[in-house]
Image 1 (cartoon, rainbow, N blue to C red):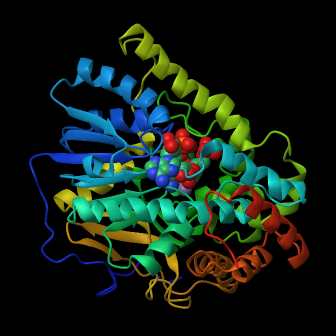
Image 2 (image 1 turned 45 degrees about the horizontal axis):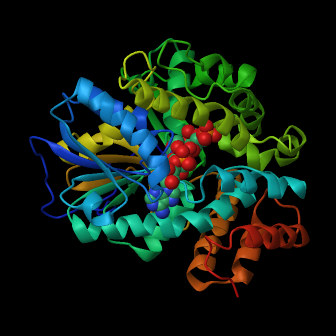
Amino acid sequence: MAAAAPPHENSGRIQEGSTMAKSSYAVTIAGGGSTFTPGIALMLLKEHDRFPVDKVVFYDNDAERQEIVAKACEIYFKENAPELDFSYTTDPEEAFTGIDFVLAHIRVGKYAMRELDEKIPLKYGCVGQETCGAGGIAYGMRSIGGVIEILDYMEKYSPDAWMLNYSNPAAIVAEACRVLRPDSKIINICDMPIDLMDKMAVMCGLKDHRDLQYSYYGLNHYGWFTKIFDKQGNDLMPQIKKHMAKNGYLDGISHEEGQEQHIDESWIHTFGKAKDVYAIDPETIPNTYLKYYTYPDYVVETSNPNYTRANEVMDGREKRVFGACRKVIESGTAEGAGFEADAHATYIVDLACALAENTGERFLLIVPNDGAVSNFDETAMVEVPCIVGSNGYEKICQGKVPQWQKGMLEQQVSVEKLVVQAWVEGSYQKLWQALTLSATIPSAKVAKQILDDLIEVNKDYWPELK
Ligand code: NAD
Ligand code: G6P
Ligand code: MN
């Protein structure tokens, strides 16, 4: 791999005349009823000095779910930021008029559908996961319409705004936006590599990802770190490799208060399993999600088909967040309710700041390849480092990927492209091909069985397939 090269000329989405620096910003959170909304809303307040937000709107298409989160946040804001203009709505015009940023984290079909995404493939002995394999494909078929709808609302009511999207499955959503809305101001981003860099920093005795400089290539939830330096330019890879070979990401987990993320048992398992994923290519440091494609048999053997991650989240995070919200509403005060800013979500403010204030900071974004990975499909939506400023982003070329990564990437990008084509054309055939091609599914026969079950339960969400 070549060293991180200077930004590839004409490779970014340069927005002419879009310099925005303002004294304050208006933000809409789409997916107002998300379990992540309180943490992100509080984080916006906490970061007010560097990213001054004076207006926050929550938008969701489920009024009842959103109201619980919104009413609790309203009480919190009244107590802690009375000057903030806060509102919540299910009306798109109200939600998207006069805003600068949309932070989007919607889950079309909510946890009830996530549970089916995970359990249906498992019934056929295949990986059941939120964003990978058959589950990710099913979720993608639901998300495309939802995210495009929000993007269209934003462009209609606030044409200069930026949408920072982390609704999943981000790889498929990003490909759909490339195909269907190529000129839109949307940036797709994921927090997994940031979390992994936090862990690598801890392994090296540093504080967090801000202390590291990195090179990375891949697709979303499907990539590899190739270089890690500290801010003085020292190569940290030898140390990180030693840790990965022994313990995966396990001994990088921070126990500092406010730094806990992904601490449920299933995640701990995943961080440990990264050791075996690393062993396949000890030259690079893998994204945790690669375990679903490289060890699908192990994943299935260690899954409980009756109690998946969706159940763990519904019994854990959802109960916790909604319980805290209800407590705030009942008691009329947010004091002592355990409401906390989500420290891990500060990357969203970093990105908004880069766009608003032209910071020129480096981010790992999901963007059209266009030569950033030179021996790979130029129309692929790749995850690579980018420099972000008020005129958009410029990619940093990652050079050629080795044969192992190239083979894996070709297979997975084809899965993602076929899903988007299936959605656009309403094609059963293409969706069957997508499932058959996934490394998590053993044959066209099993792919068809899973597909037919998924069609049945996704009638209200998927386009009709012919
Ligand atoms: P959640 O179910 O708690 O919240 C999602 C909300 O979206 C719900 O309130 C739902 O009513 C709403 N919604 C669904 N369809 C909508 C539509 N068409 N328009 C408006 N609102 C709609 O889910 P969650 O667990 O909090 O996760 C939210 C999203 O964030 C998911 O897509 C998840 O995968 C994603 N996520 C991404 C990252 C990342 O790194 N990219 C990290 C964490 C979560
Ligand atoms: C990571 C990924 C996200 C994903 C989340 C799942 O942070 O980057 O894209 O949504 O994990 O977490 P959950 O707790 O819902 O399983
Ligand atoms: Mn992610």
